[in-house]
Image 1 (tube, one colour):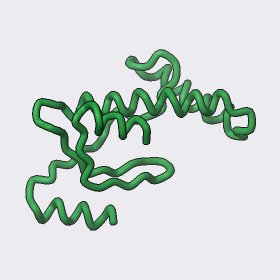
Image 2 (cartoon, rainbow, N blue to C red):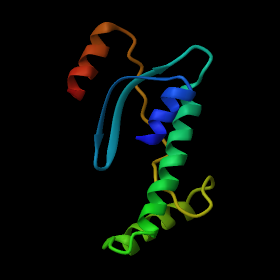
Image 3 (cartoon, rainbow, N blue to C red):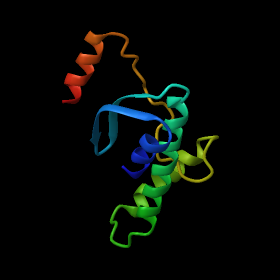
Length: 111
């Protein structure tokens, strides 16, 4: 949430609705003029991956540590854009909400 808050305050991210689920995230968002959602999402994913991986590495009570790190490391080795661990999927699966009907449909889904 710190990363998202930072992007709202400093990078022009505008959040209309969101839902955080244990293994993924849904959001309806836009950004202020002159800013790019692609760059904002890259920053969010990079920061959260680093923080969550560090939290797993430094938590002696994390019972899934070895398994999680193995999964992240295997994915990192298969990726040309990662140096060690890969936490997020490469794609974001964006959907253009081009009219009120589609926007309301997605908003209702999140609710």
